[in-house]
Image (cartoon, rainbow, N blue to C red; front, top):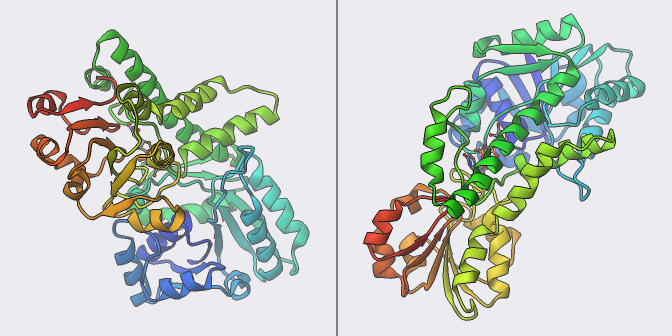
Length: 430
Ligand code: UDX
């Protein structure tokens, strides 16, 4: 099939390379000329396992191309995917201006009957509006159908998640759209759940918010475990054998970050509020998370007289391991607090350093190894679950730091091993 994909961010780019990988003819459109030029050379603007390999394969086979020329790209494909961003607005609602601008361009350019598929995460009812908007603005008399197809990929494993998704959710209002989408996804050989468009839109928020809820529940329990003398990891282990609960997303820590959970929890709260409904479970998950991200800082602030002039090692900047993304990362919330208090920070992150330098003007030193960050430090904060940090021997904290005081927001170390190595070690919920 001939596909055009609008947007070359996480959603659009990953979809584009994967569709080309299974043999579809894919054109990706983006307004950013520099990005398009880079992508046409086979260079990925984001750090994602297998992405560059798939990208280069698609280019070499002639199945994948990138362009800023939306008029040609939207003229006559079989399917157009909208995969542009829907960032959070200050009031928590989703910013639909990118989706709207693509819808307008499609309406102006399309010259053949076409299925438009919304992959971006959008509030319930948006697909209806997109359909109406395109139909109202069409320049050529063609038939347009609109379908919803939310994505469930996680950063770091995005390509794998798309190729081996546990399910493909499609939201359709007519048989023809369903047939086209089933044919498009046939090479992936994955279960397809076909529901109404509004249910598909809702499923995306429902899934993400459920996972956010699961994490906040564990973080809430972790705080209680500390008070009553239980260990959250043992509790999670005991829970995980119950198939109804499952073993994943039970890890307590310093709160969830990233581009999806924080945004999608707020978006659903906002949506509910628009209908006069208070979605209390999600509100609770958001509240717990807002406090959880400062948990370590609070513990440390209680223990120390001051951070002024104190050498602090910050291990991990990204919101989770496997990505250079800093959006809603606990490190990014905590670093300014430490700097305000006069801390002298040395930071290590294996991939997010450049992003951090570009996006924030934190006056701190960056180093290339965990050891360099620890050398001479008086306090260490662990914000990301990188393997490079996990691999550090407990004895190294003792030998390298001036005072071996470690606050671990990811529970990467065995408390007993740290104690035996002479480290004063604080973690979450144990
Ligand atoms: C998430 C969803 O997993 C994905 O399906 C959706 O499409 C987008 O949002 P992502 O944000 O990339 O993906 O990362 P994920 O691995 O889900 O982690 C999100 C956050 O939760 C991270 O900050 C992570 O550290 C945290 N987390 C995850 C926990 O604190 N505990 C856990 O047990 C799991």
